[in-house]
Structures are given as C-alpha cells and as structure tokens.
Length: 120
Ligand code: 5GP
Image (cartoon, rainbow, N blue to C red; front, top):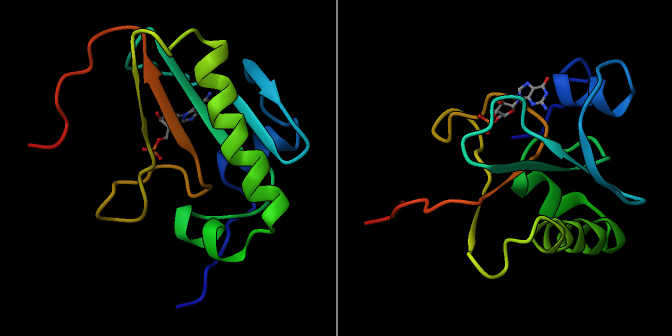
C-alpha cells in the first residue's frame, strides 16, 4: 500500500508556520514542540520536517541524514527536558489500530512523573 501524505494535516500547518507552536528544539530535519493537551508534566512531540505519515513510512523512505537527525533530536529533547534521571517514555501511534490522530509522524516524549506500566 502506498503512503499518502495529507499536506493539510495540523503538523504540516505547524511546519509551514500557519499555526503557532511552543518549540523546544529545531534542527535541520526535525522540530520538537509541546503537546497542546499534555498528558504528563513533560509532553513533547518530535516530528520530522519531511512529509512522512508514520514511523514505517519514515524508516523506509527517509534519508540516513533525516533519520540520524530525528533520532538525535528525540535524545536531545529527553536530555534538555531533564528526563534522564527520572526516566521517560517515547511512543508513536500509527494508523487505525494505533489511534493516530494527526497523520504526520510524531514521537511523544513523556516524563516528569511516574507513568505506570504500559505493557503487561
Ligand atoms: P496522536 O494521537 O496522533 O498520536 O497524537 C496527536 C497529538 O497531537 C495529541 O497528543 C494532541 O494533543 C496533539 N495535538 C493536536 N493538535 C495539536 C496542535 O495544534 N498543537 C499541538 N502542539 N499539539 C497538537
């Protein structure tokens, strides 16, 4: 199945500067900003600047430079937000089963409180 990217999704609009955001980190290929409805004291979304729908789309089609930049951006957010000591969770929802709301790849970085067990 081909990946179809919707250029009108809300994160595409954030990347074009059409919607404001609370940026915590910007790199050549990635942007990190605070979630509008935080589920934890720290809740940052890290997105690639390229038009990728979900993680597998990105992992298969992005360049090595984009993948390296994105991976490092996630790590830098964890460090910058002071999550190393207390711990954190990173999550990416995809598609219908994953209940993905915004069809542009995003990694949730959550921390700042105990998050409980997710997988039993
Ligand atoms: P998903 O369910 O797709 O994994 O998560 C989408 C996330 O995007 C949600 O946590 C939601 O609160 C966040 N979100 C939706 N619209 C906006 C927005 O306009 N700005 C920001 N900063 N976050 C948003």
